[in-house]
Amino acid sequence: MSDNCVTIIMFDRVRLYMGSSESKTVIVPGDHIELIEEFEGGKNTYVLNGDIRAATVGIPLYDLKRHIVKVKQKNSPMLAKIGDTVVGHVEMLFGNMMSIRILYLNERKSLAGFSAIASTRINPGGGRHRSNK
Image (cartoon, rainbow, N blue to C red; front, top):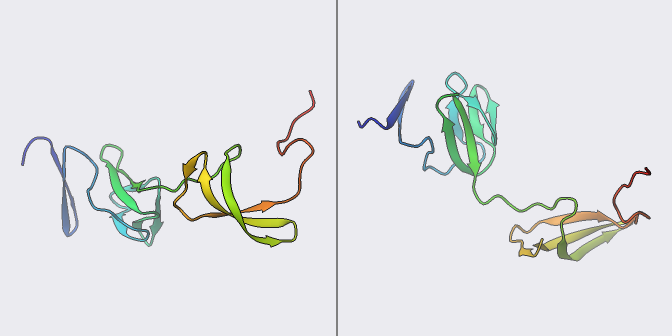
């Protein structure tokens, strides 16, 4: 092995990381990543029965100094936040609520296929809370 390789031996498996702590294997939610005896779960992971598992589709990233493993999410969907501009069409109406299929989010086409639930109640201040100073 060359000097820039790190070998991690865990029970019955050996993993080799060449210069980087990023695996090239794509994992899906629920996939076993590591054991809690060897690593701590980071972002986009959860622990089940002593196993660190993926909470999202992505690539596992290993912090070998701090012994933390996280999942770098692949193609994370665009999610609307307060203040974003949403273009869509109304799919359903029910009482004072509506379901809107999101087509564009901040002028970018949304391929995620999300719908949003919105209230038809209108606040006199334009939808944002303003404090009196």
